[in-house]
Length: 394
Image (cartoon, rainbow, N blue to C red; front, top):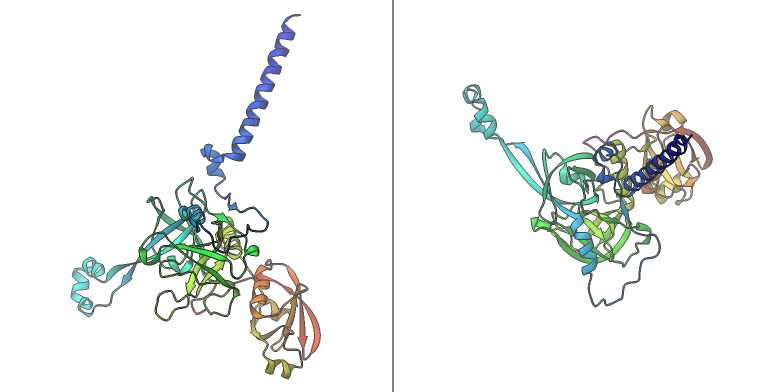
């Protein structure tokens, strides 16, 4: 019967065509998902971050002949200007007249309200419109505008923020944006040359250069969780939220604050390291908030006097100066004047390390807390809770 071979031939051709189409679709979805609008819309929670290749950084000559134009050229398109505005109430005794408020309420409301504006910087971290900046840049704003280095401007919304690290994530309705490449904080050393890019005093994208002056700066009283990169690259008002990059143009920090007695740069600036910024960014994109562990203890540095009174070495750990009533540590039997020496078998040397370790714990998990009580070792099991949001007083 001649019809059967013909049908079999066409069936083989059909199967091969389907296989080729599926293979082509897989390649497009993997390499260029933006070409498929419906697929991209369903995958809007997937964010691709550009990351520098691992390995030791390329040595930089002591006296470079070409400067750092390549690094600046690579990073500058990813740094944006952030303009915010908000309505504030203005006290005016002349407008408190009851008759005016009764017959001209709209006029009085407009007269008592004025808009204030502020400026800052941000960094494009994903091609589909995510921008990383400081929390204090956008705090309280009801209008946020992002202006790109090429002059395009977009209205932005706050995807989420984290006041305890002074970070916030903005979202603009745009695609194919010039996302920055993430570097590695593990390869950063004191003395490395760095560039600070931002919007000082509203001038627009500006590059300044300096070195890494110190790593792991804390006890500044700026944020709840502090692990700053200190730099002498000039950072001025408006630079907040901008990029601190290495000589390859890769992001190593988010410029956050300065120490100044004049309001301008005095050679002491601080940037949030890229490792902390990336963790906050990924949590906000995934869940809209940052989730941290909480034990309900108030830690305090173990001073020589306190260590002598408790009969423990001064380097033993961290003193418990307060226990939240009904909190996880309280329920586990942690007392005032206990000294925490390890959490989940990881030694705890100081307060910043303890706070970082607790923050990394997963709410609901059970961890072993190693203590010294009156000089004697003790271990308790603590069920970790979710860290409550900060209050305005914190």
